[in-house]
Image (cartoon, rainbow, N blue to C red; front, side):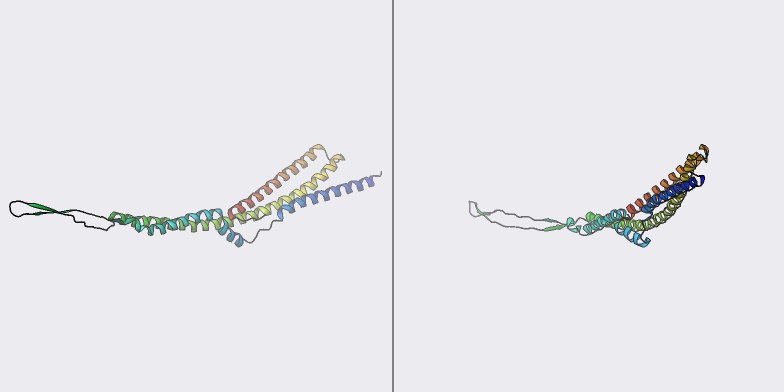
Length: 237
């Protein structure tokens, strides 16, 4: 086999390895970068409707609203009613002559009484209780509004952070493709004794480090997606 044929075969092997490496890396990368985020305003709308944080605070607001309504209608607890019934016998003494005589006249009478008691202290306490539940309701409502504002800020920050991590992942992916090509070429040259073990080890170390950077970028990107999904109550994948 001539030297020229050896060069052609080596070039063909290198090209095949590079193409195979490029296709494999591109397939992995496309499976990750194929996620297209919806517009920010749609995610914000979803967060305000579906966020667990908003839902939990809304329950507190509803609870205090119900307590306020109940306290306003609790005036009947302040009323007390009393009734009575009575029955008796009437004795009558008759005086005359030397002998006194008595007659017993049985008389039945019935009495029914009804009284209404409204303690002053209870009235004052009721007013105080109503004010307390109203204040609690207003506080929880204010907290809900504040949570909505903070949630919008958080969602916006997460959205921008994901876009940044997506660009970082893309750059790491490009660097990995180049590094894999360089390593594949160095591996062939090492087998052909064109480079020594020292140079090959350096290229291999760079390739390993590039893969680590890529995996870290991929992890950060996926983690950011998960946080946004959990916070906004929306599925992005």
